[in-house]
Image (cartoon, rainbow, N blue to C red; front, side):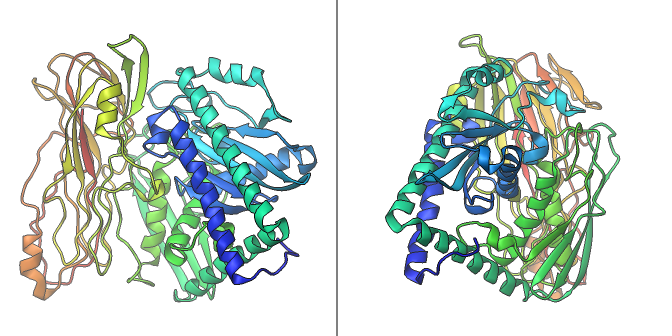
Amino acid sequence: MNGSQSVDAVTVEIIRNGLIAVTEEMKSNLTRTAYNLIIYEALDFTVGLFTVEGDSISIGLGLPMFIRGMSETVKAKIRHFGLENIEPGDILVTNDAYTTGSHLNHFTFTMPVYHEERLIGFTCCMAHWLDVGGTLGQITTDIYSEGIQIPIVKYRKRGVVNQDLVDIIAMNVRLSERAMGDLRAQITAITTGERRFLELVRRYGWPAVRGAVAQIMDHSEALARANTLTIPDGVYEAESFMDDDGLEVGKRIPIRVKVIVSGEEMTVDFSDVAKQVRGFYNSGFTTGIACAQVAYKCLTTPTDYPVNDGSFRPLKVIMPMGTVISAERPFPMRVWMTFPMTVIDTIFKALAPAIPDRAIAGHHADLVFPNIHGISPEDGRLFIVGIGPLGGGWGAKSREDGVSATVCINDGDTHNSPTEQLEAKYPVLVESYRLREDSAGPGRQRGGLGAEMVVQALSPFAVTTRIDRVHCKPWGLDGGHDAAGNGIGILSDGDQGDINGVNYLVQGTYKFTDKMKFGVSYGKSKNDDDKAYNDIYNASFKSNENVTVGLYYALTSSITLAAEVGETRSTDYIGDEAKQYGGSFGGIIFF
C-alpha cells in the first residue's frame, strides 16, 4: 500500500487487533448459521480481509492451506471483471478447482467493501459444502465427474441476487436445502466482515487504517526476514513418496523438494515434484504455493498475527504447471489435501540438517476422514456425513515428544465431529474414541500417540475413504525410526477376507481387519537404553494385508467398519548408535 501515511504505534496495535476481531466475528457468524457439521463443528473453512489488489490483510483460520487459495481467488475475480466493473452490493462467487487450488466442494464468495463511494478492500469466505453433485464415492478420473463447476460469476449484482444461478446450483447438488443454508451462512460471514471493517474505518479514518495495514505488513515482512537469517545459507533437498494415485496401485508418487536459503530470503523449488496423476489426489497451483507458505510461516513467523501477505514477501516459489500440486484441467482434484501434507513435511525434512532444533519429524499426514452416505431409517432421506477428522500423532522435535491425536498440519484449527452430534443425526453408534495405548516408539523423545475410534453402523450405508501413506510411512529424523502407516479394515462376526480392489461389496458375515503399527521417537543415546526399552510398544496386531487407498464399501447389513492409521511393526530394535527423532503414529476408526 504505497503512499500510506505513517501511523503511531499505539493506533497500529489497536487497528491490528481490530482487524483480527473482524475476521474472528466472520468465523463466529459463519459457524452459528451454517447447516453442515463440516463447517460449524469441523471448521472446514477460512475467512479473510483483502486489499484492493487482493493481498491478504487478516485471515481467520480455518484451514492454513486456504491462505493462498483465497487470496489468489480474489485476485482472479479482480482480473476477470476488472475493478471498474465491480460495484457496491456485488458478491462474486466461484468453486473452480483450478482457481482455488482445491476441490469443487469449496465455494468461495467475495464482497467488495466501499467507503464513501471508494473501493477499499474485499471480504471473502471459502467453505466446504458437503455435496456438490458428481459421482458419489469411487475414484474420479477427471474434474467433470466431481460435481458442478461454477466459473467466476456474480451471485449478486448491485444487491440483486442472481436467482437463475441459485436455481442451477440447487438442482445440481444432492442436499440442496443444506447447501443453500451454507450459502446463506457464507453470505452472512462476508457481510459481517464488510460491516465491521467499515466500522473500524469510520472510527479511525481510512488514511489511518490504510497506513496501519501497510505498517503491519511491513512488520511481518521484517520479522520473516530476520528469522530467515537464522537459517544457514545453503541448498537443502529431500525426497518422500506417496503410496500411489489410487488407480495404479503400488506405483509410488515421488515428492522431491529443494530449499535454497540465501541471506534473508528463501526459495522453495518444486520442479521435481511428481507430475499430475490420473487419480483424484491432485491439487491446483495455489495449493502448491500454500505448501511453501505454510512451512515458511511455521519456521519464521508462527505467532505473528494477523496472518497477512507481508509474512511471505521473503519467500519465492518455483513450480512448473502440471504437477500433483499444480494440476491443470481436466485432472481430478477431489482429494486435493492429501499430497500437500507430505509436501510440507518434506520441506521440514529438507531443512532438518540446517535447523535441527526447529525441525519436526514426519507426522500422520492424513485426514483419516471416511465419508458415509445412505438412506436414513428415520425419514427415508439421503444423508451424507464425514466421520472425523480423527487426528493422529505428530513427529517429535529435538527437545519434546510429538503431540498426540491432533489434526494434520494443513487442517490447522479444524475439529473432530462430536460424538453426540453424530449419534443424534446419523445411524451410527460410537462405541469408543480413545488414545491408542503404547502406540509411540522408543527413544528419548517419542512420536505422538494415535487415536482409536470404534463406530457401529446401525443401518446399511456406504463408506468411502481415501487414505494414503499406508506403505510410505512418516519418517524419523537424524536416525529416528519410521512411524506407522495408514489403513482401513472392516470387522464383523464372520470370516476374514481380503480387499484387493477399489470397489467392494460388504455383506453378511464378511470381515476385514488391517494391521496396525506404532510411532517413533526423538532419539536414544547409549545411556538411554533403559528409557528407550520402556518406550517400546509391546503389543502386536495381525492382519492379512495392507489396504489399497480409495476404497469404496457398500454396507448391506449392520456391521463394524475399521479405519486404521498404522500397521503392525516390530519394535525390538535398540542399537548402540544414537537414534534421533522421528515420525508419529496416526489413528484408527472402526465402523
